[in-house]
Image 1 (cartoon, helix red, strand yellow):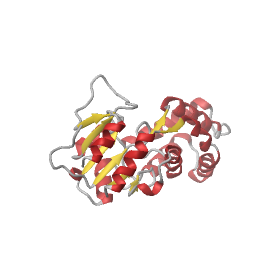
Image 2 (cartoon, one colour):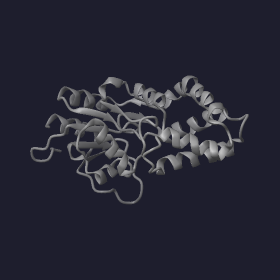
Image 3 (cartoon, helix red, strand yellow):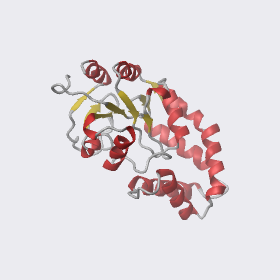
Image 4 (spheres, one colour):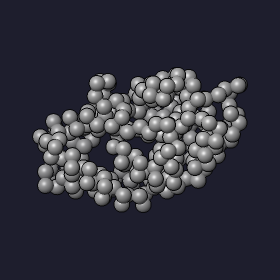
Length: 241
């Protein structure tokens, strides 16, 4: 696994779940939804909450309005669907992330090769972006990052629902990252395990590296990527840049 001829990158975007973090995503999401739903037992039935949570999340993922960040889209849609007031539920959700979300750390484990990748890229002076799908608030992203054992200050940008206006797999998500960090998309490499959400960075003009340790394949065919391999291959790739 070798980089392209004389190719250099000013930034490498790294996915979190299943890439930097070894996580049982299905069990994590199931536990996450159940814990969050229990906070709304006084407002909605469990079925109603899950329906509206997924509906509001889908609206956020599909949003294309640059005037609204992801957090605003989510709360606007969730409140519209449930009839609940933002000022009423925001403290409930904030308290959940402070006191309940940390209990989900049992589903996330360190992935040592990923820690080496981050350190190697930093030592080479390459800017890093934590390009996790920004459907969670910053506190949830930073907590999951801490489960990986990788320091927050390793990254020039960490995408969250508060600071982003688009989600994966929208190409605008990747273009917004490039704009925020001040580099052209062609100067960036996106590395992640999700064949749909991460490889869609190519539509924004970025090169892509499919990380196969915990590959998440959506659909029968894997979209074209510039490079693919295990996390150790990515480490070797960066070492040769």
